[in-house]
Figure 1: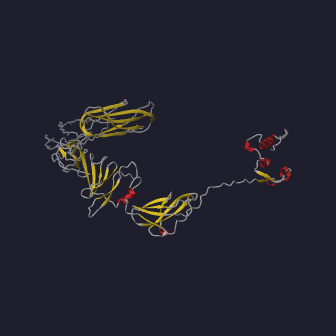
Figure 2: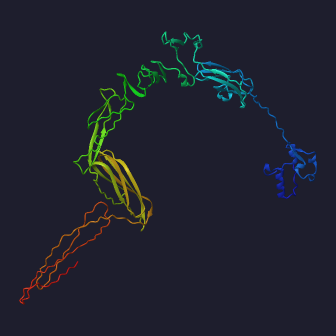
Length: 570
């Protein structure tokens, strides 16, 4: 194979690098150039004449020296199926409720299946495909004795179909007669034949039936239409599922279905479907089968508080008891100002000690009176630097619902003139009945990051009883500070009515008299929230009635009321 010649040392290094890449001496293997002679040596192209030995200047293109090498394509022989031959030898034999079809086995290569066509008239165009047989035999179960016509044709594995066996159809029909000789079995293990014929009628009107003495096993589906010509006689039964389902005819001649447990109804409860009715029977070891009345049974009655109620038999499992007031408008007129509620309950039903299948229970009813608008309030105030506070109210009677409202604000300084620590406050409600362990109930939290008062509330509905109630308030620092906001205050406005002031002054004739009186507004008793600020606004109404009772009695003879002057200063 030709190779690139070595380069002289005087070649420029960039040209040297380029040529070395083409020669495959450097760079990647995929960068190497392919020579025309290499293509010819590899058989990828054929030399045209002796042109590869011509001077390079004598050719201008690769097509002047080489022509493509056309590879040879191998011919692969395939195993193709033969064309189907026409079917032949179709024969039909009638048996009880069916037709046996047989035909000649196909001998061509690549056979797949045989189509079976059937029609009620001898016209192939009106026939329909009823089966695709893998062999050369098919039993067409018609379930009747109707005459049918049959055709068959073969299909190879490529889906190609052959011709029908004939233009005219092959007739066949099922029969209604079973030959006893056809049922005779030959086996050394049989001591007697399982089939026999019996006359269940009279000599004048015989009625022969075929009796099978043994067990019948059916492999595959059974079409119920195959049984329509037969009927179970009185006293006979067809059972499935280990006797759990029984189809039979009663002594009255009507059909019935029995659903029970494994082994039949002997020691099991069972359900009977008959004449459009559903009845159930409960098995008892002492009384046998007891009729359970309806499947869904409801007993009702009227009872008073504390009365023992007997639920009549038969309930095998504990019945469900629902209580309703007989008089819906129950109301006690002696307590018109109180809300009233009727509560009803009952004991757990228990089996009757003497009546099997019966149950007993005791109903209870009471009328509860309560002042629905009354609320017991307990005000607690917390002011301090601790992180937790706990309050409790003990032995609170007849508690039904607890609601706790809390107002919380924080202005804990961080030491800076305008810096306050972010805080978190958590309110938790606890309760316990009859002095038992405390139960933690509802809880709520709020993040405090400004000078605002926050409202927290927890609420719990309880079963009415006596409880100890506790509330805990926990505060903790959070990351960050705040510098703005304002605290909202709740004000309690109170009024105080002063007493009347009756003043009488009696000055001398030539002098005046004055009097000073102080009016004091006492502090009110305030409780509940923290008292942060108290503001007073006093309104004083002064009504002055002046009456001069001085009369002149001088020697001048001027007899009458002496003028005077009154001054009031507030």
